[in-house]
Amino acid sequence: MQEIIIENKQKYLDENYPFVDIPKLSDQKLCIHCDKVIKVVDYKVIQIKSGHEFICCPNAPECNGTVIDWIDID
Ligand SMILES: [Zn+2]
Image (cartoon, rainbow, N blue to C red):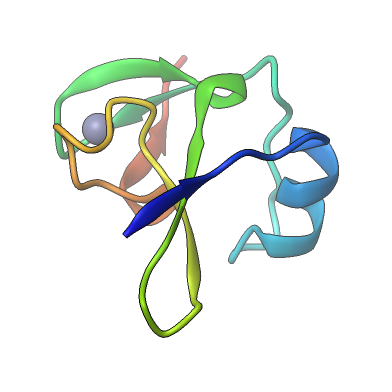
């Protein structure tokens, strides 16, 4: 696994976010894996051996949560 540096984080989100409701970089979410509020702008992208890329919790690699583990906060 290695982290990939993303230059345009909003564009990457727009193109790779797995759900319809694409967050803004200024949004905050709760990561249910590490139970911390994260800023979307701080997300990391991790590439695994097969070449697949995952949008991960900013607290990776300590937290192995990915974008599907983020829930909205009010
Ligand atoms: Zn997390």
